[in-house]
Image 1: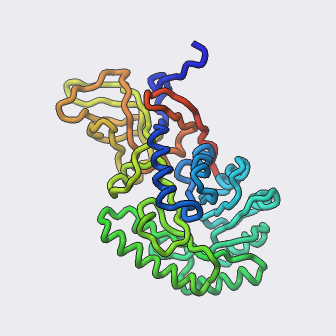
Image 2: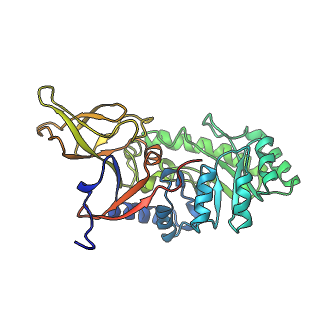
Length: 342
């Protein structure tokens, strides 16, 4: 029938499925909590310009990126009003065309080498990335002011500082999470006093309402959510699942196998969950082995199951498209995951 919308049962699996109502709810909720410039959504969580466009429609027009590929894709999609590469790079040459084409481009720096890369590429603005407790990128807080001075001597504008309290955002106990966030932001605030500028960029989905120091929060996972963040009692719901097909059933052993494994799921935060409450036993390359929840029968070969990933960002990056469905499980749109790659 012309114009008929496919149902999710017709999708080839494994397939990313996003429930539009849940996504819209998450976007509206965050927009009410952190309106306009208070949120700089991190597109690494979904790698999809169509989803970023929906974030812009609720008032969030500045974005974080983790890769130059993401920066290029956002600019090409007309979403380059204020792009932050919240990551260090030692070769920034591909950013210059974005600047020349009119995008506002800012790069994080934490060393003389990354500063030199930004300067050589003609990137006009930087944020000094400060280590606030997560053993990852970021300069020693005591070095932040000197690095900012070096950047200004090279003719760059220092917009301010950034620091990611990633060691805190997933802590389940809210009081402990608050203490860790507060301690991290005390470090960042002290560095900001040395650096100057208007921007203090920090935070994530797990600390979006706890971080009172940052002028902008770099949350991304809130839009789609995963099981790791779902343990924190946040006001966001699961919008994304991986649709899988049962391909084998062992009725004597009491387990079933679906075609959604390590190559379709981000597993660094642990096993996924089944939306219907079944128990995941383990994942292998192409398979998830599970049993139904207590009192429920085993599925049949060919049945579909919805799998909730533990970590949204790498899960989405494994897939080429997001299938947006309505409340009747009809596919209304297919959004390319067009920011994959480097």
